[in-house]
Image (cartoon, rainbow, N blue to C red; front, side, top):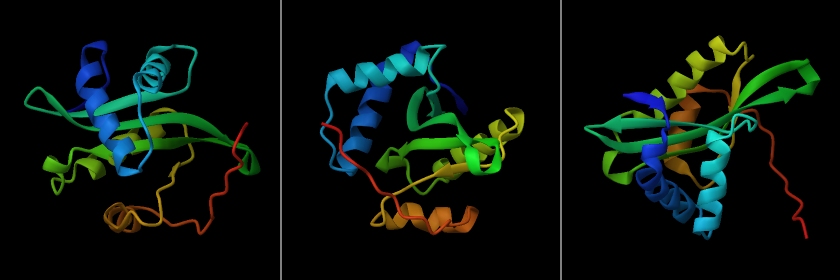
Length: 145
């Protein structure tokens, strides 16, 4: 079952999001977890959270938001994070979460959904190449002080 995250999900979500951070070798701490969790439930913040629940346990999460696409004068959905518990991979959970976002796209009048992944994330790219177009853009980042 796919649904929006609820307050009762925090512990289960924290474990999954920490696994996501581990995958990308990003240090995680309670400060970051609490900040993101707060954003998800703040009506004035764009970040939203979905989860895939099996037998009362969350096994997949997705964070998304509405994003302007200035060059087209349109809004799109942006998928920030997508993670499935390694024990539950191979069950098309990631694809189901993305398909759910596609239905949200229609409901929110978005003109598509975008996301990025690391070039080394071969398993994810196999799925993404089947269901979406690779835009060919490279991602650059300036670090703040």
